[in-house]
Length: 392
Image 1: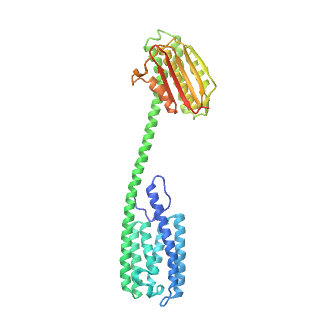
Image 2: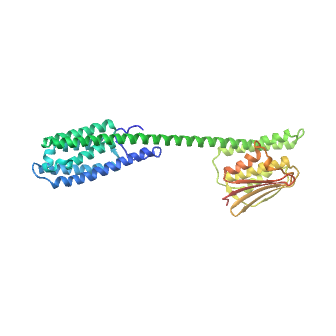
Image 3: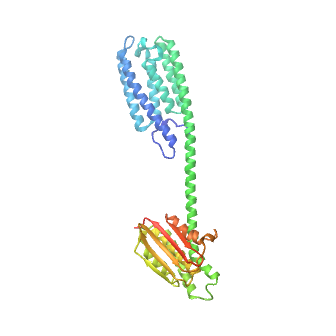
């Protein structure tokens, strides 16, 4: 993960959830730390103001640092913690450290418990958490130098050495912790980005496969079906029926191309679509029972095309046998049935490479959340039941 350059901002982008969470946490916590320590430090500074503390200097210093703490928190919550905010915090804390002889009473200076000691610790920790190491580490050293100079000038070199060690440890530990967290969170974001990329690639591949399957179904149910009839000798010599069928195939393919280039429609009358299917098969005697039924256009396409594929199988394998096409709505489910009294077959024996039932019927229905049930047996005819729930 790249080191955040001089700016820590609060947004949490969806493509970097770990880094976004890190940024949010390390904006909120420093803001709260600066605000609470600044307010508490101001109270503590005013509580002990015995000489050599100069009250004329202490009061404006406390007012300025308190106002800064409030401004720091407000700015951080609204806009994040940028380089200017970090630099201002370091500068004010260093200045307060240098002015320690006039701001801190000698009796509260030892033990690293003075309000300026707390201020310095807060500043170095916040700097490491909100700025890149190339800036935050020198900032920690600058605050430490200011504290050492001020404590020594105040006549307490032991305190200067003790708290200098504390500030250096705080600087190092916070810098290392922040760097490690950024590195590991960066790896988490990289893994998440890889997952998103793979998911997008899978969707694109699945869409491409589905488009190919639709194209194959359309070709199977039109041109390839007609060629199969010719190859099986079902049409002998010049035939008006063959010409009509070829013309119907051409019209179907043209309609499919137009439908794909047009925007998706709304509701469609399924019964009218099924009558159009029957009109394309004038040579097939079918008894039709079609109740009025409206469904989404994509569902109507799947049901009508699946029924057309089933009727094409009747024409190919059960020519002359009585057949029926039924459309009904049963308890909110749209049901289309194609029934014939032809020779029938055993569905379990259909080879896996045969495309008709697998894609032209089962595949189409699955794309709209429907299903197809094929019931047949040798000598017992065939019933193909298409179901889609949600019709109205």
